[in-house]
Length: 204
Image: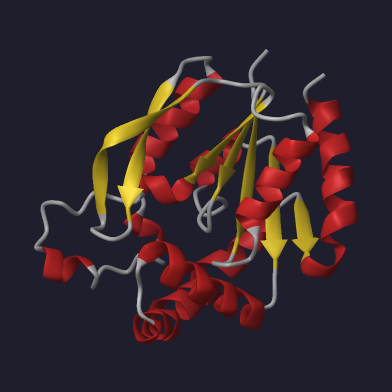
């Protein structure tokens, strides 16, 4: 039986990773489900001068290596292990050490662009959009980028205004229409429990 591929999308800071981890927890852990972050599929910019890498619009779908992602999705669907890149957000390059991913009953693909590619959408048996207010997402993004990615508050604000917000409105928000389930912030607890039961039915 082929694994169930699940997409979890939503704007930056919407809580996609939290939702994905909660689903995995409810499904009794990583033996049954594997989480793959689309952020690791950003294009390697090592061939570009370091001073120019930060000018790339990472909130546009074209910043992702879609051919590699599609290849890995097909391999995992066919029961084959893959080596997922590890992306450095500090240098905007792929690190030498990748991460092995083995097929599981459930493969969760999480990222802002998870519903933006028509070909990938055809592989997903379940598509979820995490819908969170923009103010909350901005605060979470600010906290994450300063703590985890070594960014300054000024750079986070500039990126939000110039690329994150407009790209969200142009690409991410419209991709909501491809979701089977839209998960609002205020209904998250009950909804995740229902999603878990639905997933169990899909993998029988």
